[in-house]
Length: 193
Image (cartoon, rainbow, N blue to C red; front, side, top):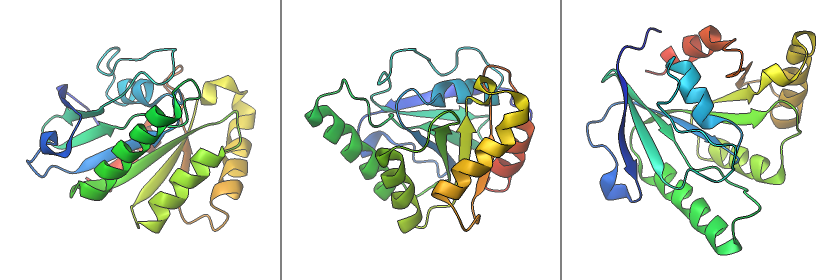
């Protein structure tokens, strides 16, 4: 997909700030520092649309990126950041859950996991929450540049066996660093918008 004019529409901290124009929402979830902001920048071919940081836990609000007035990419705060206090972690969890329950325009959830690590307990909880609530879902196995190209597909398959042994959900590799695999990701997203 050729993206011409992506822009940050709003950084929301409460449901009354969510956009009301009924555009489809493609929602990104994943633990802190899994690369959601870099993934957005890579998809829309911009360097700094979504602010990235090497410090986990930077995104503390819900960022709605308007993609050419066709749909939103919605960046949720990352979960599981260990330096956050328990109270802050709970607040972020409630914030994410409130959005997922109240938004009426979620078309697809893109769940990002890191190719180098088995899913954490928090990842499994989030994944199961998505399935239990019948959200359409695709899993992005991110940071594929951290492995040799010849090992990427085996590792994607291994992670799918752990989370999705039925193989009824699409798992795709992605690398923001090398900007590879994005065509396949766009093909999948376009089915939902």
